[in-house]
Amino acid sequence: MKVSIDDLHKAFESRVRLGIMSALAVNDALDFTSLKEYLDVTDGNLATHLKKLEKEEFISVEKSFIDRKPNTKYYMTKGGKKAFEEHLEVLEQIIKSQK
Amino acid sequence: MKDEQDYIQDIAEIRSMMERSSKFLSLSGWAGVMAGIYALTGAFIVYNFYSFNPDKIFYSTTSGSLTSPLPKVIFLALLILLLAIGTAIFLSWKKANKKGEKVWNATSRRLLVNMAIPLSAGGVLILVLLLKGLVGLIAPLTLLFYGLAIFNASKFTFDEMKFLGLIQMGLGLISTWFIEYSLLLWAIGFGFVHIVYGIYMHFRYER
Image (cartoon, rainbow over all chains, first blue to last red; front, side):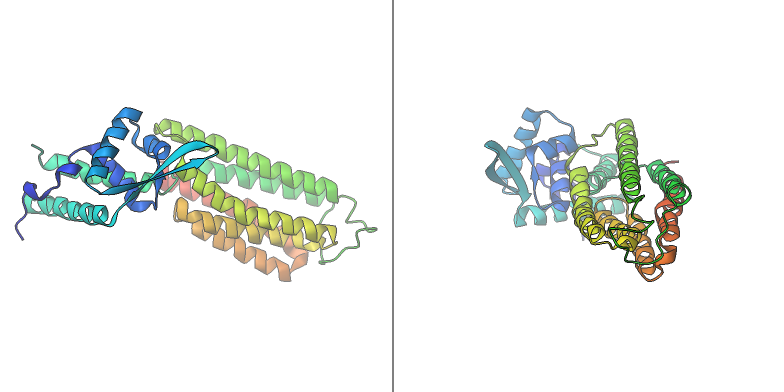
């Protein structure tokens, strides 16, 4: 199979978005605060990247209230999981082909 | 335009994030060693100064030489538990700080909850049995429930913790049969096994 960098999804170009997807790949769901702790980014920065992934329908949002405080949980959609796995495969192939 | 190094870096970051967000890896081997030392000291005090060494399961709660030191034994056991937990938290905090991570995050919370649930169930059961006079079961059941808690929590930290849990459970079950050796087996499980495990983890992951 011939792979090229064009096969890499644009949504995964940013390390922050890649990080969000990696964390959500191994957790059922994560809230905003947990993601922020893992990624060590500012609120605004994280929100922007989450919006972008949401627009691609790679992640989904679930809003609820815990002790009257808003709590936003993010989880990976089926489409997101597929795209992420494909991205990993392409990364692997690129590295292999360049060896 | 990214080059090969960037892609390798991407993969490294993906792996690290997956690990960091699912496992709490700031537990220090030294915490195990210290917990073992506290436990050995405790077992020594209980055996030598309180002459507490049950050789059968049931003791009458109203009379008997064994029930009088019981409050002191319980107090000492709780003190050891608090010291061990305190040391583990302090050393984890130091280790996490060094790596630039937070101790209190979604992963450590999950680890604690998964450990606390079997441990609390065991604690309540032991308390009830004590009040009914089943003094001989304290050491076996603390080992058994501690083992269950550790085994359950191992999913959220180092894989090796699974073996620590299995060994404690095994020792707990053996000592329910050999009550006369239960204090010795308790000292082996909480003391010796913790120290060996701690040293192993230290050399494996912290050097």
